Image 1 (cartoon, one colour):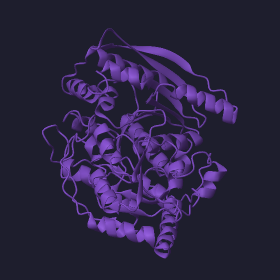
Image 2 (image 1 turned 135 degrees about the vertical axis):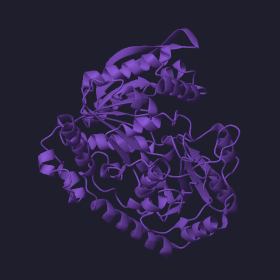
Image 3 (image 1 turned 60 degrees about the vertical axis):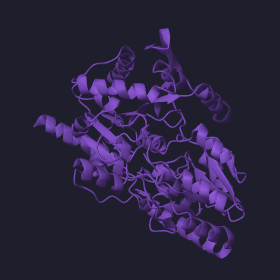
Image 4 (image 1 turned 135 degrees about the horizontal axis):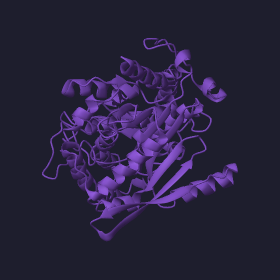
Length: 481
């Protein structure tokens, strides 16, 4: 059932009856197993957030949902204590160990595994991140080792001892859960859950494409560590029952460079609503705030533009929140400027939005979407945004979009993207205007809130659920035929 608040918050208008009526589909209960690759039980990754919000919605509709993910030390204990203190809930945790061989330890590594059900109905199977990383060479070698061994698995069918331990664990969890759907976004999971590796499981295999780098073709294939380990992933993608692209930009990219047909759906609306009530976020009136904000400063996200802008606008104060792209070298450059304040990764974005007057999104890579754009606009925070990838889609025709020289896929000797030089002048001009003109600011604040709220209310809250149910019916029809 929909919660009363979710109905109040969103209009659900569904006109797609190409598969079958939603009423008929709604009688079917799914069992969805999702494999997360972002690290942390409460990761700041946009892809992680959109995935978990979809699972929460499906759980509210009566479907069974489970995800495999990774937790940082003390995250589970902190969550259990929080639920007990704030909500009076007793969260039961099942604990076990997964033994993986490791070149760093002759005796191998024991990885803690926990199983629990969150208060929103999402079942969790989580591995301790730090121990898992150690088994694969530690933080410095993790992506390189995983990519190499995953490629051997996909291309030759051979598994190292440590990767075999993890793959066997994953497959056993899936077999025990007996899902109707498996959703993943990486080559290792696609291979481990493929029909060739799990031939006796009758289920829908689905991929969600959160970045162009995930795809094993085109100029951005494998452009970030841990993504697209092997060209053989192309065959795995073509064997899937469904592929979900999170923007038309990603859908077009997949077709242009891989002739790969995918289905486009924006992230589930719950991605942008208040987590517990599923209501629209409160509109903020942040003219009195002082900070120009940025989330996840790193080279591909436009840290070069941020640094130049902070130098050009020394009279303004900048606030950045670290995330998956942060590194020590960049942090030193940021700290060298007195008007930049650095804060750690933020899992509760409501705290971040309270502090920002304007949000910068100066990305120079092929952005798959722009969750932070939508989140800021819903709260009435103006965004100054680049035109990279799908960001114009997220901006919904609103001001301000500034053209940048985007990454083309060229890489240096270390395999790192080459970032072109940028023109900082239009950024400085637009930022200074917004930060100094109250009438202009408040007019834009009202516009971005109003238009983005209407867009979200008009979204079909059932679209992804209907699509997943439709895939199951198509699979059943294919098996009968």
